[in-house]
Length: 315
Image 1 (cartoon, helix red, strand yellow):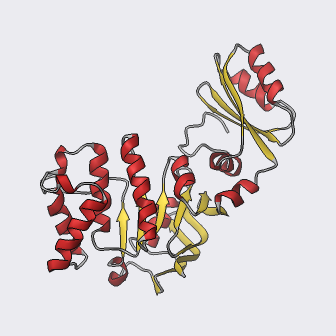
Image 2 (cartoon, helix red, strand yellow; image 1 turned 45 degrees about the vertical axis):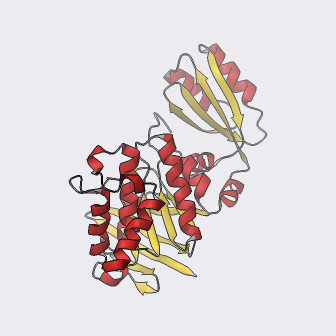
């Protein structure tokens, strides 16, 4: 069953076309990973899907109904975990869940039970009476997720839910996402951490410049770049001259630099490992070099020419 479907969705802000005929679907019980560099249109797509903004043209169908800013009923069946922690620090964890549950129309014994179950789900039962102002960053993130789950949404949007937290909390949240799907919740998940999406997503959509440029399972996306190989090298003397020397190597398609680290994409079978090493040694020295099997990050790099965090020096 299709839970959400975007068809030829267009959204403009003045002269900027944030969404350029975007189309993709989300199937029941899956985690769909949504990736893209800054400015790709991810946030606009999420806001449109959540009914926070309207589309200029195209159609969004969610849970069998047309989504728009006036469809209150649909909002009662979905949850949104924002990048920012949006809980009330003066209220206890339990009171926060009661407040958000009430906003979604959950009342009485049902609300009491859902608060209890949701606190247990996110591992905060022992902290129910505490104010989130005293929580660690990871605990606040888990409470933020709980507030979006307390009304048992059928569809959950998680927009970079693990920003700035410790590895243990990140791992707990990822495991929680997997458990959600077994309980019947469909999840749209965005992250700046490529490994998170690779670990939990059933399918992945990659956006750039307001368009969907690729979609499919991890294996399907990697299959698109089997003709590529990536060499990663860390040098002791990163310079503009070295960057251009790497680019000049025969068979090299893309070079991404981040400080002293370079990712060099060549055609498969180019045999460029020794050439890259030789060029680097001629321009200083090498502290690390490896030739990797294709990953989701390699797919992203090949399709967009950018690191996910937009931290590249050159592309």
